[in-house]
Image 1 (cartoon, rainbow over the protein chains, first blue to last red):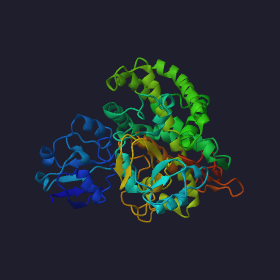
Image 2: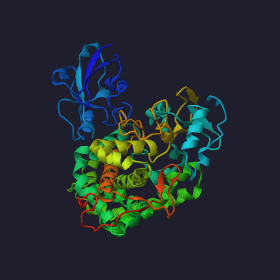
Image 3: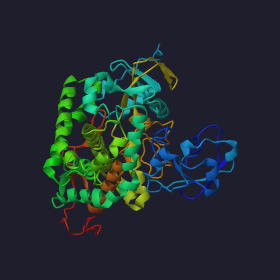
Image 4: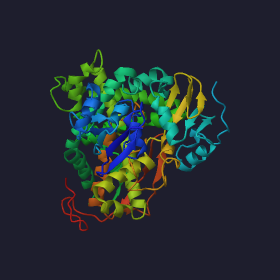
Length: 105
Length: 424
């Protein structure tokens, strides 16, 4: 299982074993990282908002337009690194990915 | 063929009018994760996992139960509303509302809008030493908050009161019609027409679309959301926000105030815990006493959810107030825990593609209510000689009446205990 390094809202780094083929949101939720994900992962809310480490953004990709529209609604939106974790599919290539859970709105 | 119920559930949604339902929910869940309600002819999903699984498929294999009412649903909810649209048109409109009611745009209303309204309402009774908070506060704040973001005259008591009263039959419709009441449907249709007529002059006045209020923005940005965008769409969207953002938040505010007064030591703990405790308290109120107790749907096709096979065209109900107290999902589920991990992990604002677009606004209103009452009426308590609160309603529930006593203060003078004036 690829390991994801997820910094929570308290600033602690959590090592999250992620499942390939599933969304990053699903793995983060297993770890009680305050990811509400109230749309269930269908890109219809912004409650699974994370910041992707700038060094990894080329591998996850930046948020496409419709995803960015949701993220822009948050006062914590950071262009270029904000992503919905439900829209990042875990692959072997993401071994070591570093993300930070965005602050609560 | 739908699965046969494992046992006949001895309780029904129809039994729950005007009683405290939580013990019944526990008894229902003891019958199974998914139970058949013979009286209502509906499958009830009782667990946190089951409700999430069910609502995840909303729009794909579920539709609103109101669609069984035909034209009445179109009239009351609006054919092109967030409720009844499906597919990409729904997603587009839903995204628009989420962004417009997201924190980036809403935070500007927290102090100058919501907190000011809260203080204005409290000013009206703070010198009296007593009040009935449901009718003198809770019922007044949410409708004004929505008016603020829509650019409607929230300071005009007469107009706001007219809108709120006109919405009552629609509230009754959503509260009771699923459990059977024909007259409420016709009353709600009439009320919908009246609200649209009350809104129309304000909508027409913003036709140039140059303002920053949401009605102006619906004029300006609406044509990119749906084809053939018209004034009717703006009426539908405006009244939808007014309605959806009013009664539910009224109920949540009443629960937040009620619990502060009745849970021993809670007010002190919230006060001592600072901003994080205040915000977590609001989430616990929503989890334990979220205003919408259940949401009904009809299956578009045969489904298998939470281990239960259900035929096409069956009523299914996500019992969210029960799910939010599911002991297999929440540790110490019935307790208010200000340090609960992932405090927003509840489904008070629904789950799936129809999640509530006004959640951020509702949270802000409850948070500011708790903040302002803790500051300005720190010794507020229920009046033991007056009628006591009960959890009233059916689909949406509130604690009322809320007859309270407190040390009277002047509108402008600092409170003797806190030293704060309460002014925003």
